[in-house]
Amino acid sequence: MTISQLAPERALRRLELTVVRRLEGFLHGEHLGLLPGPGTELAEAREYQVGDDVRRMDWAVTARTTVPHVRDLIADRELETWAMVDLSASMDFGTSQLEKRELAVAAVATVGFLTHRLGDRFGGLMLRDSTLRRWPARSGRLALYGLLRALLAETDHGEHQARSDLAGALDSMARTQRKRGLRVIVSDFLTPEDGEIDSRMEPSWERSMRKLTAQHQVLAVEIVDPRELELPNIGVVMIGDPETGAIREIDTRKRRVREEFAVAALAQRERTRTALRRVGAGHLVLRTDRDWVADTVRFVLAYRRMAPRLHQPPKGVAR
Image (cartoon, rainbow, N blue to C red; front, side):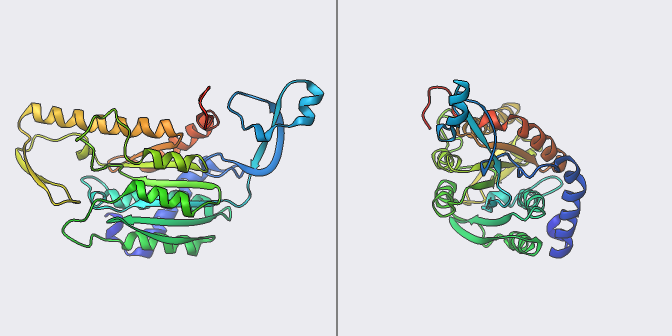
């Protein structure tokens, strides 16, 4: 039984139990949030490394040792997390254990349940049909449940919809939510230009994502269904674009057709991965046919080790 087939309260309780039981034991410890980020309390001084923020130079220690030192910061005790969830028509799809939209809600629940227990404020933005709905940031379990209920209640409102503007939504998020903290972007990152332009060109949302990572710690959660990666040999099928209504006939019996589809899908995913790496965002891939809890655990444990290096600007590049 999928999440959407359960009553909202029962579905949310099941999600909370899944997250708390299976994740909390791996991730408890110092209050550094899901991802390590900036704070306000001074910590230990250490030697300056290329890429460190010069505004954190500790001149007293530098003068005593004659070696440049910076002072690290301890994460704030109360952080503000915002999650933006792509609820476009392409997310109302799934051929395995969950629909992509249900997995997106599970991803938001994971971050929310782990942060609300520490008193952090959690807010949400819902993107559907180029409309961005805002759920105010509040602390506490009841506020988080309210956001998750709203996400579960969002359903397809028509036969097909206009393309959602992910770049515009990211710009709006950066412009309106200025308090530094964690920003979680949950989407399949499928855009109109996919398959139509050179896969080496940057996605339309990359520049907007870069603005966001310049001010916040950003975690991008890419939602993937296995049928978006490869086609099975099931004969002639009609494939429709849920966001435009366009329909195309494809003969999956032809090996060349299946191979070309797989190559194009791989190129799209690699384009997304490369763009997120360029802007310095964390990148978690969740699949509807895999154990999303286990994948989240592996990602967080690995990311906490590599995040300090990931978020340093490259040598010789101004940020």
